[in-house]
Length: 178
Image 1 (cartoon, rainbow, N blue to C red):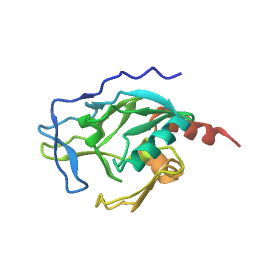
Image 2 (image 1 turned 180 degrees about the vertical axis):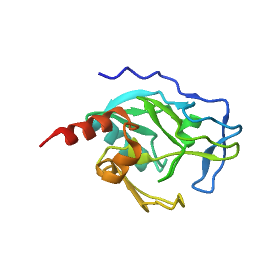
Image 3 (image 1 turned 90 degrees about the vertical axis):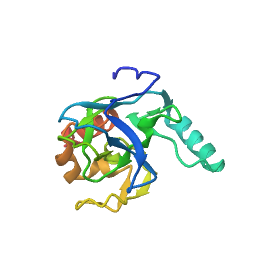
C-alpha cells in the first residue's frame, strides 16, 4: 500500500513558472538543480477511476481544458488541487525530471538555471483513453503520448523504477508473468 498523499503540493524554490516554448506556461529552473534533488511533490485528493472520468467529462463539458492527475493504483488517481504551479510542468520525451517516490519528481540529471523542468507523462498516465500530441522537440520524441506508453520496452528500460506507483506495479506484474 502506498502512503496517502498530502493535500497540498510543494515546489522547490529554485523552480518558477514562465512562458514555455513547449506549451503555454512551464516550470523553469531559476538556479542550478543537482541530480537527485527533489523538485516537485504533488498532493491532492485520491479519486476512483469512475470519479476521474466523471470529473474529466465535467471539465470538458465546461470547456475548462484538463485536469492534472497521475495514476496511483489500477483503480485510483491523484487529482492535484487547481491552480498549483506544479501543474504547469510540461511533458518531454527526454525529460530532466523523473519519479523517485510515489508523489515526488527529482532531477534526472544536473539541470542548469534557465532550463525548462519536464517529465515524461508516460511515467504517470495510465488510463487507456489518454492521448496527447507531443511538441517537445526531443530527438527521441514519440509525437503522441498515451496512457499505454508504460508498455513500451524502450521506456521501461530508460526509466527503470522511476514511474508512479500504479504503473510501476503494472510493469512488475507484467514482467513477472509467464
